[in-house]
Image (tube, rainbow, N blue to C red; front, side, top):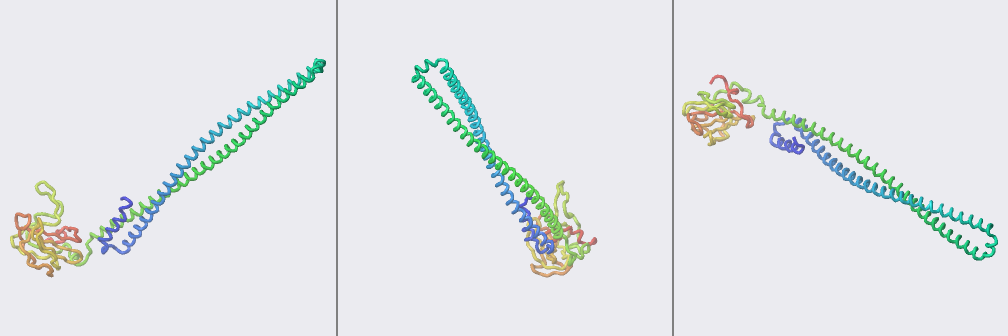
Length: 353
């Protein structure tokens, strides 16, 4: 049974049959119903929390994806910076080596051609100054660029470390949310099991109470089950329950007794006439209330000898057999009911008419 039907069934059942429920069992059902409703409320709350967790997991996974993309971009930049630094480092080494070679060449040339050097001292000095100045500028530019690259690499390394730490935090968050999700799912399964247990208890109690509702208490007319007088002398032509007629199953809530036209119909037990009128199929019909939710029904009557509200005694003449309604011969349709539930009249009546 669906979770939402149990409280509804409980309310309806108690509303219509509260008078016949045992107080302790009725209280138990109400308490179980409250527990089911409380579990259902908690279940809805936990389901919403799981949805929220799923959203947070999805959002965090998107953050992780973006962070990984950024980390990959930073890694690519770091690799490019490293390659550029290596190129500038090689250029710097080459530049320093070239300057050193030039100094060696100038030094050797000074001793080999001292006279020429001294003779052209002014030009030589200018040449040397130009070389030194140019190489200094190149070296300075290489050093400056290299330092800039190193600074950029440091910043990229820091950004890379920050991204890695951020990834660790986000991944830990996803793991934590996953654990929380599993815990909530386990709780939902537990709530569902607990709810089923309560619902099964409710169903067992309802079944028990429904059975009790149809049990005829052993008092009043019920004390004479199997010893009540027949309402009329005649021939039993249709029994109680499912019978075969012309090859078809027919359901009868009572019995049909063929009798003489105008034969006296007697009440089976003391009671009060609560109804006499025409009913489709059964024609003129009388209903007598015998107390304790027990009723006897007499159909196909020719006429009533009593009025609504009259009190009657056991075996008192109350009507005449007729053939009103859907019958071809004078017949009495007779029923015994307990709280609208048809009873087998033959089990209530004595064996002898």
